[in-house]
Length: 338
Image 1 (cartoon, rainbow, N blue to C red):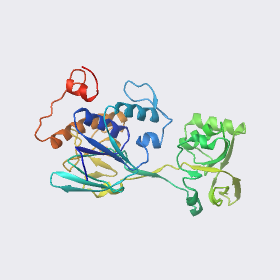
Image 2: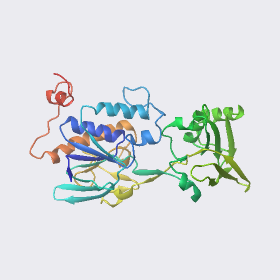
Image 3: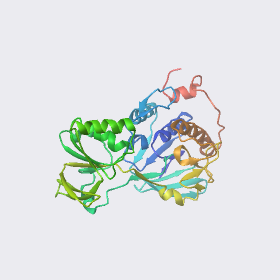
Image 4: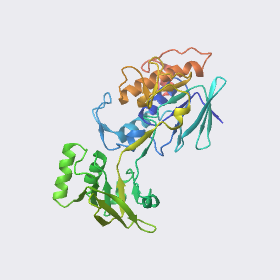
């Protein structure tokens, strides 16, 4: 069993900055995330998309923001537990006993939920035949675009993600774009650019079609797509990408006795504590009057929650606010010379 001053659930931007704030005031913490990578929604949903509302950063991508936050954490030894989902949280005297799907157990006075909108997974293709190709030649997100170079890629979806990747991959790949409607949900400028590439023969567009079947033994060889009028086309393809959005779920969090409002957790605005002492919620998953779902709001919430953790983690010590510009203690923790 691992003992720590605070356990953070969620390795997105808010969770990373909260860890920084905990370590800055001298508390230990570990981070659990059910994704296989650090960065949360910023990495899973829009690693290449520009973000414009981070203070003092005019523009950055989700990946750049994540990397900058990790660089900020370099002075500290943060233990990450990825691809692990918190399955159980129960009270044990003055601590919380937290168990994960990876077999880890934590004993801590403070649990900070920074899980964005909860656990999420992509909406998947309905034909059963697609399952055997998942994570081999059929994907719901792009981790390394270079694997598609020179290959035929069939992309399904009508939103920004599908359009953006169709445009991007058309530079080095043969792209089929398939959508079940004539209209697209993406930004108009992106839709216009896609249609221009279709006109130039860079993208093959199929509208009012959906996937009907997938063929291949060890690797994907072709797919059948079905028109609204029941016409079937067979497309030779080496890869398939599906962008149908995500299914958001609170998962086990719904059973922890927290004060829930739809799929968010009610908190106070002093400590961002829930109705359970020692359990906090920050970022998109928390709710309070005037809540703004902005990354900068999550940073503020995490900073206050971290300081509230001090009282439970160090009951015999009094927390004293210190500025990083003048405090020798904080400078030492950051590895800076006075």
